[in-house]
Amino acid sequence: IEKDLPNILRNWKQVSSWHKPFKYFAAWMLPCIITAIPVGIYNLLRFGSPLNFGNEYQITITDMTTMRLPSQNILPSIFSYIALPLRFIPTFPWIGIQPIAFDRWQYAEPMIGGMFTLSPLALVGIICVFIMKKRCRTHIAWQTSVIAIIVGLVLIVFDSLKAGIGWRYIADFAWSFAIAAAIGISLLLEYASTLQSENSLHKKTIAYTIRLLVAVLLFASIAIAVLSWFVTGREDSTLRFNPNLWFAFRSWMTLF
Image 1 (cartoon, rainbow, N blue to C red):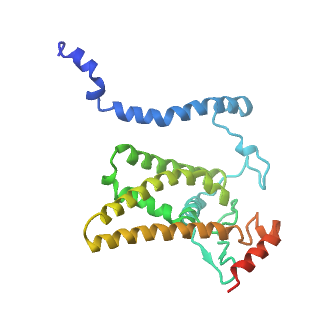
Image 2 (tube, rainbow, N blue to C red; image 1 turned 45 degrees about the vertical axis):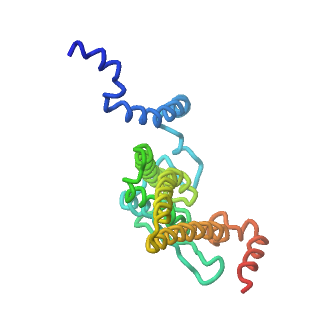
Image 3 (cartoon, rainbow, N blue to C red; image 1 turned 120 degrees about the vertical axis):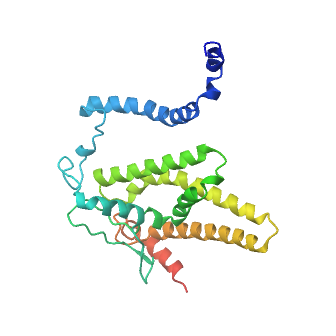
């Protein structure tokens, strides 16, 4: 063992099973730590704790120093952020505000839907991450997806507990899910490309169906995003702040 020790130390990168996971973990965490240090110092100097970001001292509709999210509202809040269904209406813009009811009062802005109903393609991408795990050529893609999903879930819980329900708060965690979804959609399209290259009508049909599905879901997400600008009842409604644009766009969309 003593004779082999120098060789083991020389080749520790190859023989160590924890080296690559440690490098990957460091690549994720070091930027976070470097960014968190000055922010933590600022929080300590201003609010007395590195973990106190001053959220409770903002001037808003309620006293944030005493506000606590009722425990029975936690799961409905998380569900609303993730999968609040769309509400279709017969008049322009054909999408309406979806009412959210809680057993006890909490802050809740009007929303038209949750993250995955606003962007169903993202949901497909995340599902593909798990279904097509074996198609990942490197472990980094899989690990990145899992970490991104975990980070997104943590942020959803944090927003639910600290901020309540807000349409704009979806941006706090949607970026993290988007990372995983992008990897999943890439795997799905790569699979479709593989099927298309084979000399089989059945497999080619599946390949074109997959691509059509991705395109339809993408344009559906874009359509929902555009129409959401004109939804009445939202706090920053276009009808309220720019009625000329609202009526002009409605006239274009209701010509036929």
